Picture 1 (cartoon, rainbow, N blue to C red):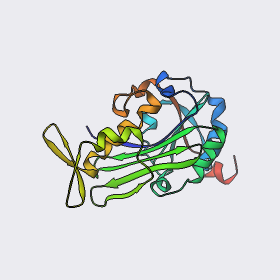
Picture 2: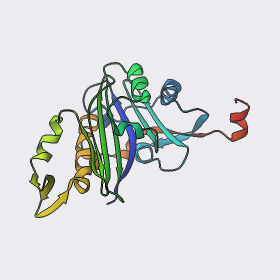
Picture 3: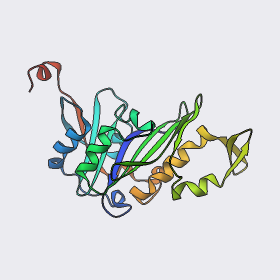
Picture 4: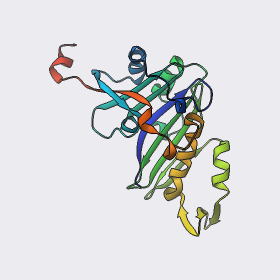
Length: 217
């Protein structure tokens, strides 16, 4: 199965809280929308996390606003996360949810792109990202506990890792989605590819018509 993802998960509650399918609260969306730094968006109705996690249409935004947690889905908002540091959206969400863990994930199976960035209370702890053509271009921070069993599957050859699973061999980019899947366990209580995405409610936002934006409406 091909996977695509570009989303942020934030949780200041117990591990696995989003896997309890908390109720989305539209009244909490205004400060969350402000945290994204995006302008001129308006609500376009209810959605679910399956839609929110892979928002590939231009100018499409998804927000999930819960008591002590949040979800943001956008195709380009998290590009700065694949560098060392904390982009403004991370800082803003951390202010809304103090003492939270934040995970940004990216997947695009066509080019074997994978990325995950982990923040604790707004501070970057770990980021890894790569793709088929570039290989792994960033590997910053101490490995997190969920990574250890996956790294144990790897062998080193010519200075590169290869992962051996059920008699098959995968390079770093091809195996990267496994790290993304496992990173989500702390937020969902299960892997990303096991999560019942349609049961987590979110809200879709779209850009206002250009005339409305021009008039400040």
